[in-house]
Length: 120
Image 1 (cartoon, rainbow, N blue to C red):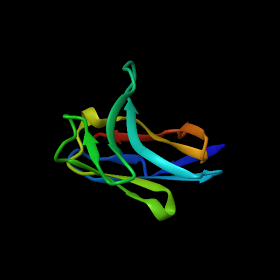
Image 2 (image 1 turned 30 degrees about the vertical axis):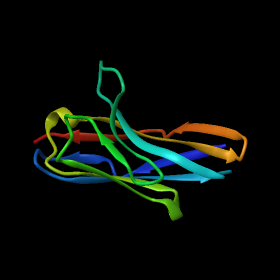
Image 3 (image 1 turned 135 degrees about the vertical axis):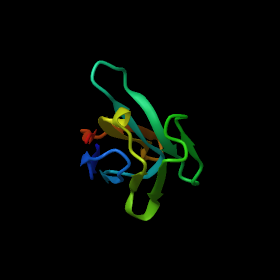
């Protein structure tokens, strides 16, 4: 089993910043992709940003230029630096990771989610 634990959510005013962290633990052989998704009330979960083990990143158009995803492979941790936050960024943010628990067994895990609220 691979567990993902997120931290760093909270309440912030429009234009403010937050940094989310997600640490993976458990029986991990290797991690391929790590990423952040979000789900606002009444909406489907959507991709925010992903990063591969080699450092290649992708972003949703709505967050490009404002959010930055990064990872520390040695610590099995992924981060999301969020700047210029807008009320429409309000959502529960989920961490996701996929990889191998053995050379022949894959895993895909989700974190429990952390609330981000952008409001004055």
